[in-house]
Length: 141
Image (cartoon, rainbow, N blue to C red; front, side):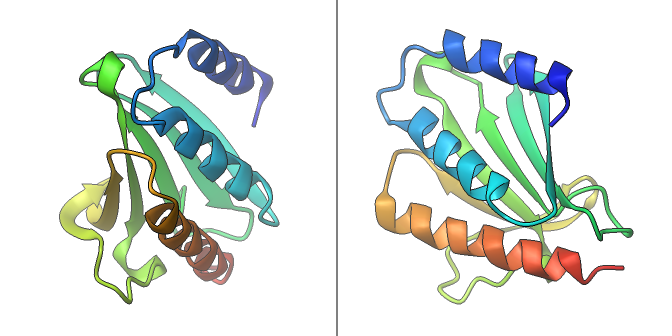
């Protein structure tokens, strides 16, 4: 992540004080997981009052600019939640826990997983989707 994105992300996280659903904890864990995957680049895009997006891309990707987007939904700063989205063909969903969102990710069909409060089992499920989507993206040349 470049210095400007890192600074903007740090300032945002430092200002996020109310977190009754432990959403910030989930976001940080997803970010750490993505940082631990090989050849992954992260970008942070802030749209206050709408979303704060962490976008993950793989160095080998050529068709698309990302493989996953972890959005902090900011419609109510005291009650933020996460939506983790993938391109349909880059992710599996064996338990069918995601929502199909036509044109939901940069104009392409997506699968999104919404997390309203910290749930370790669902967190693990989404984390596995992140790993699988990264693997798929690494072959998208």
